[in-house]
Amino acid sequence: MFVITGATGQLGSQIVDRLLERVPADTVGVSVRDTGKAASLAERGVRVRAGDFTDPTTLEHAFEGAHQVLIVSAAIRGAEAVTANRAAIDAAYAAGAKRILYTSHQAASRESLFSPQLTHAATEEYLARLDVPFTALRNGFYASTLSFAIGAALETGQLVAPADGPVSWTAHADLAEAAAIALAEDGALDGITPALTAPEMLDLEAVAGVLADITGRAIRRVVADDDQWRAAAIERGMPAAAADFTLGMYRAARRGEFAVTDPTLETLIGHRPTSVRSVLEAITSQA
Image (tube, rainbow, N blue to C red; front, side):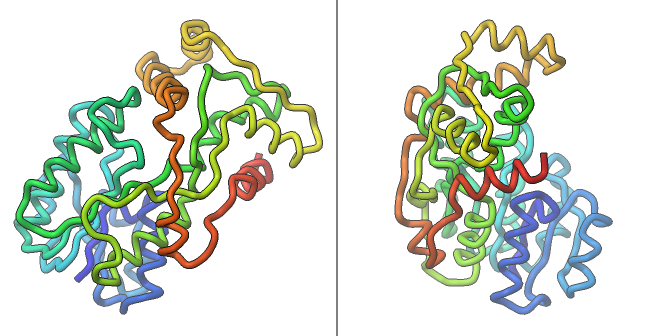
């Protein structure tokens, strides 16, 4: 049985959908915190069980009978995220999984300026120490993140943010397809993967240009001082911890941590990955 965690989230739900195109529903199980949100999956014949990384006792039942487990990284910040990911890995191992997959990130590193990359690096290291085949899916930076950066720009005509750098923005849909292939096809992706990215890198200056072209309005990129941006964000109601978290992303981007592209994703899914323009068109259509 294939077991997927976080199956009601933005990435996990799409992974399940793509996997169900490749394997019978009765071979797929999901581990979710709220089984009610997965009712539609149960109706499709998927095994739905409650599982919470922060309560490892629930995972034994959720992972029962698993041949492969795909762990969608915990939506937690800080040291607790590593603890949660390790709990899920331990549970998959204890369940006898023959292979464990984990959704990592293209910039996973102990030296990153963006805190989630420290979590991914530590989780990869832990997974690699087990005597079980594994795949760490080094996903490209999720393109949907742009919705947070451009929201105000659509209203004000100014995309205000700290200095950044090129990012290989990659769509959830393409990464979900890659994960489903990795699950369903033996040997498709093993170990720590190359960066699974779209082929295009854009900084926010370029993003502003694409937005202007889509909307037909003037949108100007404005570079804000780090400290001034942080203070303004907190004044608008952003928690200080969230402001620091986001500032880390900009600092990592301008150091070039996300300025990486690789053909592996396109080769694996067999078509050109979704363009940043397409993602921005979808975001603006919903604004």
